[in-house]
Amino acid sequence: MKLAVAFEQKSTEGLIRGCVGAIDGFLATISRPTLRDCGNNPGAFYSGHYMTYGINVQAICDVESRFIFFGVIAPGRCSDQVAFERTALPNKTALFDSGFYLVGDAAYTLSDVMLVPFVGSQRDDQTQDAYNFFLSQLRIRIEMAFGLLQTKWAVLKRNLTTGLETTAKVLEVCARLHNYVIDENKVDKDISGLPGSDEADDIQEILAEITPVYNSPLGWGYLPTVEKLDIMPGTSVIRDVILERIANMGLQRPPGNIERKRLELHELNLM
View (spheres, rainbow, N blue to C red):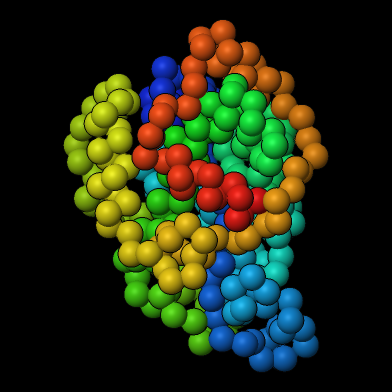
């Protein structure tokens, strides 16, 4: 599968094979919805963490941070896992061929079709911490996608004041324009180039384009949906295989890597 090949080539040593998309959620901020517009339950749209109203948007991107799924799914108070379950994605991922999966943060339930990082004290284990680093090489694609989306389209930098139905259409249009810009600006290059210092430069260049949002926990250009530090239930044979491969290869998180601080903040504040 082309998507999996592209992600594998972004993973050091081709370590994480089979990823076909990076998933996450972000909070699209809105003005307080009218009682009529929200079924007499505006509180469902209120994010206590950010102290604002919003909508939970679930999205999956490819290795170019191009959206391959974008859904305006649930009220802002809704968790990512619950929002995910409201989409058609659980049924679609259940049909994945063996060995293919999405990568997400720990707000999602671990399975053989959804790989997530270790959290809390689990990260004290050197192999599990290394796994988190290598997984972050792929997960960062969706974080960059959201950051670029909100940086590029200024209408998303403030509360959307339209009705919920119109707001959903505005968000979808912005996502389609996001993909159009990426397609038009894409550099004609051989995707088989090996990751390394060029990959680090590529990430830094993209991050430099993102305008940080004032109250984003990571300083990203968007507001991630925030989950308490929790370990979601679930098991994954695939994750166990990757851990064994990391241990056998003696791989560790590179010291001073450009993503370390962001990853740690991400896991501490968003999961």
